[in-house]
Amino acid sequence: MGEKVIRDWKKVKETDLKYISYELKELVDIPCVIFLEGPVGAGKTTFVKNFDEKEKSLSPTYSILSEGKTLLHGDFYRIKESNEITMLELELYLNNKDYFFAEWGLKHLRNINREVPESFNYYSLEIEPFLSTEVIDESEPSEVDSGLRNFILRELSDID
Image: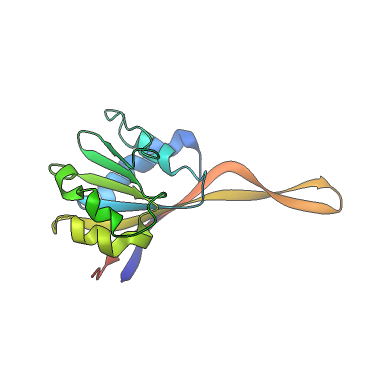
């Protein structure tokens, strides 16, 4: 698989997410799958909730999939075996969708690719907390979550 960095954003505040979403829409070719990567609590679901104010995306953590008018949001955190993806019947959900956000989906890339229509383009959006160093006492500096995030958008190619 090949990947190419398209854009990165540094020290993003939650209030900046609508701007990031607007710019991301200009950078990707639709229809597309966007794999959301990052640690628990990085803001993957928050990003999708802010992606389009017309969509009322719910967290799909327990239902795995949450469907909006133009987007599908999947959370594959609880998927243990890649063959479980076949059971989701993704192709039925993706009819007339522009965006498919797949949290924790990159490890299931090959199986997701088999279920998604060929017309879809593939990207990953890595979201990482921007950690700052804080000195709690003079002997122990520690890294703390600053509330800011770094985003890296990559185009994925040669997926088989």
